[in-house]
Image (tube, rainbow, N blue to C red; front, side, top):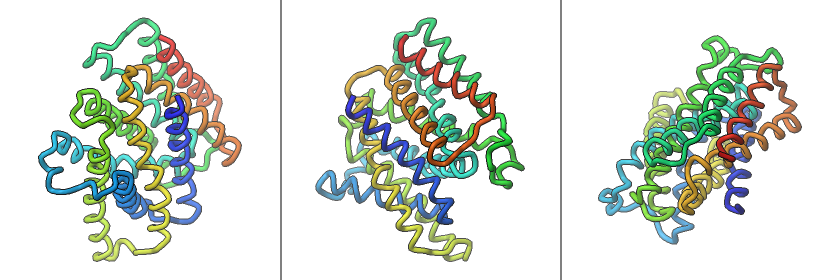
Length: 290
């Protein structure tokens, strides 16, 4: 459980870092790219050598690393925008409700235990997602985001679920070795490669401007971000069912981020959103105790 506790704290830390990006006017995309570069360096330091070489191309996990690289660079930007536009609490809950996807996958494809409580939990989660996505008059929302609707939280939910599912599949099917740092660095490396090409193109075209604060912001994010994936794979490798471990992780992150949002950032939720938060917590508890 100590691994789970550390994983929860690190995930909440990522949300807080994203929140401060807006305060210091950090270019989110550039910071995320530098974050992935940092994660590759951190992984190589932990491994004791540069983790990516020509042999990586022949590894069974390499195609999954490519897919996750695309999902990471896209999903992380969506998460950052969600935190900056809707606050830590709503962004965290929409992200963690993605357990509907990962738990559903674990039950269907790995024949994990299913009963009335788990089914009730999944339907409760869907209700929570709908209520949480109803705008609150008390929240200060980015006008540009508000004009296009609340689709950002849905995308946050979808990408998070897809990433969790692929990571769970790779680890459970032993496509990579137990919590393989090479695989972790590989997926971060792909995200860094894709993001760097886009970023350099932005510099050349003048659409982006290099600033050291973006580098610093990326480093501050990249160090804990590496360990969110590495520790998640280690937790999965303990053999606990995905339909149990994901709810336990997610309820802890939701409660922790909600408390932080209310106390540190003075975020306000509408009555319906409070009901949604309650249902979200209830759904995770139902699945966990099932």
